[in-house]
Length: 280
Image (cartoon, rainbow, N blue to C red; front, top):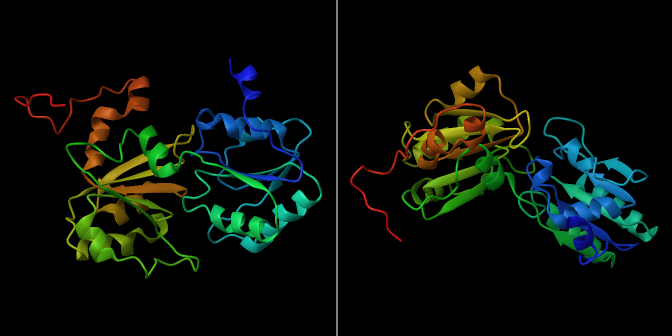
């Protein structure tokens, strides 16, 4: 039983901050610690990508403070958000900083934690399921598969200035990583696709866009690297989105479990030959 089990979990103490990952969107993917923190927090400072259904787990008298940061839209400055956490903790509040996905995966949780350290505010990190793994799983796309890849690269599609990061070695990633998972890449997919093809990736390589992953609004677009820009524009899909490049995308025809629940007929493993034998 979850209720009694909660008593064995750490408590969110007054004057402290929990940096919590809310996962990709589906409330069921919250951790037990995240749910307990939501039930105990005096103030919840949350991002734009946190599903409102997750916020319904907050206690009725909790104060909800929006601190969303969305590209191209007016947003709070990161330093102001970090200092707000300090201010609330010093006022004796039990503070829960709720961030989409995982706080330490392109979530700037490290910056916020360092500010808390600077001001001697006690804190706890509560990891969440990052969209680059959980969101793809909800689309029926595994980030690793024994017959396809033994490595995967996670990268961000833009830097702090909003452009494709110059620091990324596209040549090395293009040649060395069989599967590439990209956050915040949809806006710059034309340049990113060109960079990867210039590094030797085939224009026919499978690509998938997963928008609003794991939520009721989830949409998945399957295309190829060469057609990715035109397909994304024609689809009308918009961020937030995870973009994945690699042969694992082909497994969606077999592993789209959400589609199967809605009546889609799944196909046999496209990478297994009829005469192959199962190996350990």
